[in-house]
Length: 151
Image (cartoon, rainbow, N blue to C red; front, side, top):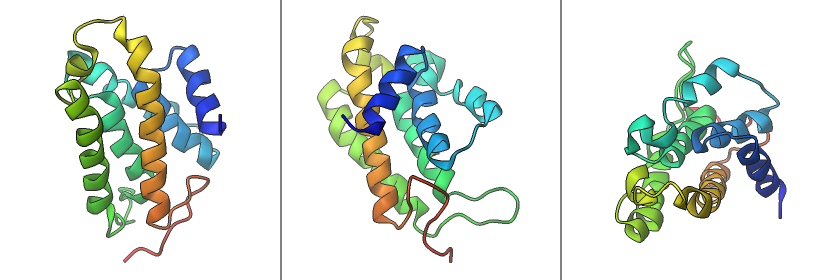
C-alpha cells in the first residue's frame, strides 16, 4: 500500500464521501486546509445527492482543476486543462461506465447501498491515481502547486 491507499482508507473510515476524499488528497498534498471548499464538495457526494454523476468522477475533475484551473483572481487556467479533463472523464466512462452500465452513482451502486462498501473504496483510489497520473503527465506534482508555466 502507498500513501494514497492509506489516506483514502483513513478518510473513508472517518465517514468522508468520495468527493471529499478526492479533494482532500489534493489539499493534503498542498499542505492546505479549506473547510469551505470541503463543505462545497458535499454537493457532489452521492451523485449530487440524487444518484446522478458519480462523486468520484466530478470530484476528480475538481482535483485536476485545483491544480490546473483558473483561480478567479486573474490567474488563468492551464492551457491543457480541457484535455486533462477530457482524458479523466473518458477514462472514467470506459473504466466504470462500461463495467456498471453508466457513470451515475445509482448505476454504479445498482440502487443497493451494500455495494458502496464493495465498490467505492477501489473506485475512489483508482480515481485518485488517475487524476495524479494525468497531472504528473502534464508537469504538475500532486505534492504542491508546482506545474508547467501557464500560457
